[in-house]
Length: 305
Image (cartoon, rainbow, N blue to C red):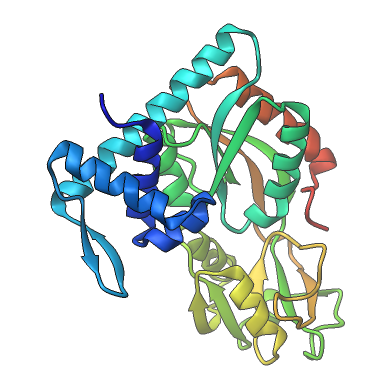
């Protein structure tokens, strides 16, 4: 083999980013290093991997798409070999690929990664944020060993260990007429304009809260990014629904929010650890899961109220 794993990593970064500049930023290297790796691979293999678009980045050729898929698989197997080698030396080391539900990501990942690096300096954790359906797919394909997610529609081939129970709540701008309430009935919200979190599985869960009570929400808009919803709600006029209460009551653009509980014991979500039942967990993966259990003390997430 005349090309290196590093060159494959640079190619994969460019293929996923669709841009040499963006790939270089994500890899913390110079753009010429990415370009040189791509040029070497194309010359060495005798194939064209990308179509270059002036001022519009890169697009993969059909051959490039096939090569990208196989390159990612090869890099994943190389990481597995490194992990297996570290296990033979009884060390928690190597690279561990973890997935996290996008709405949980900012509340648990910073504390987990920081604590894991401090405890196991020879190991590295690579964490990807995704929706529920994407996490399940990544677990089945072996792209991640562990997923931190909710107990929503867990399929039979996955194992789920519950860690924290998270009841739903509503959030409003601080000048909303409901902002100072301690709790609300869902019926009081049915006619209020709702900005819905539009993620696979998550959207069905929030809809079910109303449908179980014979209600239908008044959906004003739908977005996939919870932080965008928080910013829009903080400007007034609408409300949002979520399960994790951030320690901060401010949106990313500085607006202030009020969190209000829902009466009637609506169906709560449970955050926990999902793994593939048939997947052989490495010593590094086992150590990471144990840290998850330790940081979620008394059912409370490290970055949430």
